[in-house]
Image 1 (tube, rainbow, N blue to C red):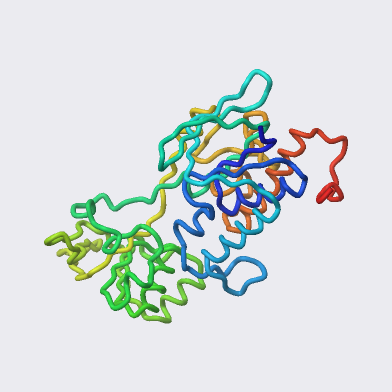
Image 2: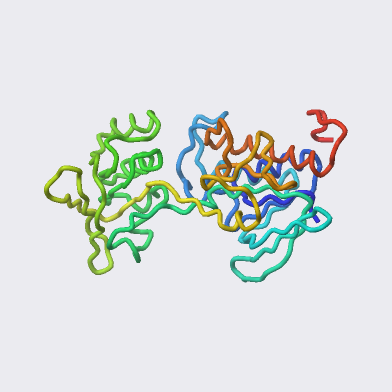
Length: 327
């Protein structure tokens, strides 16, 4: 039995694991896919500009640094294993039913406390829900940030106007692609630095425009048909590749079954990352509290707080100071 079981191996979960080990607690981080979270599954080779100490670091490299740091501290890690159920036992400990995603073998894990840090694992990319969207390979249609190698020299349509879409457009342009953006709003909605970069690259954009169809012939994407508000005729944009970055929908059905309070599709926590269930804490993109500012740095900070709260819950120390770390 571990003192802490962390569900999710992204920045929040890995940081929680690190701080548990700094307090010499036994901890295991369980991820349904690969460790690294969205840094690996979504961003990959995208540069990260807002991690302190680095003017620029590739997302995948930063993820590996966090993984190596956690393992160096003695954090146990389990990948490709999904949490099916969480049950609080009569003695206050937790039993978690898990399933390996490749072998499909099911087993049980026991813990004295749980930290939910599923982050991107709870998010499913929003789709366009238009004709032609289903059945295309990722070489032609992706909901992730663009991979430069896939789009080099191609005609690319980027759907969306937030930071992910703006960054995809920049990456595709840098890879030598011909890029056109389609945004349903009348403006871009990302950070100013990303907007400035797209404008500097002179990437054309159609605002107040909604995608109506993906034209597919012989199994290949040929064009995007879109309708601009007020225009009499639809717009046809010839392309070889489509990137859809229009946000994500949250799926917390499993968390709700466990009895964790969810509001507005986010887990409600207090400043100590406590949920409504005693002994269950949460951190990262999946949580909400007053003053929340969603950043990579914030996720790691919340992981540290959740670990500290789990330490207080399990060990019940007479006092807690920074001097307790590394002892």
